[in-house]
Length: 478
Image (cartoon, rainbow, N blue to C red; front, top):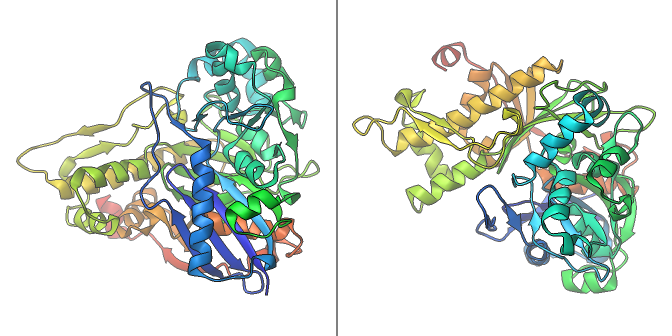
């Protein structure tokens, strides 16, 4: 028997999964810590986390995994890593982190990205980068250069969150083409590093890590890291990808026209195309997909609503000591439409789909004589669904067909209320699968390590567990 390990480096928690290579079945899955990790906002609109905390929780999750399922660590054939996208980790020459990571929902770099978009020209940016530089990793680095110049001078390499965890495991400073594209550091037309944007920002390309293949033996677990984790030295790290490309991969979404969705801290709809199409208003994020090749490029088209699961977790803290399942049941007690109570979920940083405008959440139509917590809980879930419908309409404008959506049976898709609102308000068919991001990372590691000869082989064990279709009566109500 051989095993595969998958790690999901989220902004709320670290998840680890152990997969049986032969059957493709999940043998054990754990999450650490039990409570969501803190996101620090020293200034309104900022969002930071300490990378060292991610590493400690990777260690904790590995120990929990070993406790829940005793396995021979020498039989782990590969390790896969997926991670929160767009974050900026800064490493000095001694391998130390220079400052807290500036993570995906931080809005401080918006003005730099907007100015770059104006100065470099929309035609160039959309035609080559498929994006505005916006609030992505490159623009975050420009903010550091301008506002923390002494610290910037000490940078040896920049990393994405998953690159940092791989570095802690292997001692190698590496990234992928897909990773460069998520930072708007990749020129799609030239199939090369976006030197034009680096030159505009006055940033040296020497700060970028070495590039490795997404599916490959990228590096080996060092004896020091193996001791910390309780694993076996020499185990290969053989896959890494950002959370949304990986979520699509975990659902076997690899070809044009296929759609994946997730509703964790943020809510995302992600489709595949094989064109160089870009949204003229730059509301759409485009990334190199995990199975893209120079001979046959495939791009992921992503639209994101930042305030999804984070709204639900905020409400959970607000209403008291209740579970998410209890919240779903309470919300279902209110009627469809929550008696005209509207919750707009845009309260977690600048929203790309709103053209990078910093904005706040809103609760509209509140009546003290009509509405209770049931209505607020339903209105929140319906508001998130409404925002996701908005982004799917934008996706349709770019030529991506959105009729059937695949999702993992996780996060807000665990809520029957959320699923009902999603399919009936959007006129969609929803397929739920027995997978999550950490499982996807484990399957990817199997391909990269040569355990599986193809993606088709890697998805042995992936099962559709539920299909939800719209109902005419409910469609009318929604």
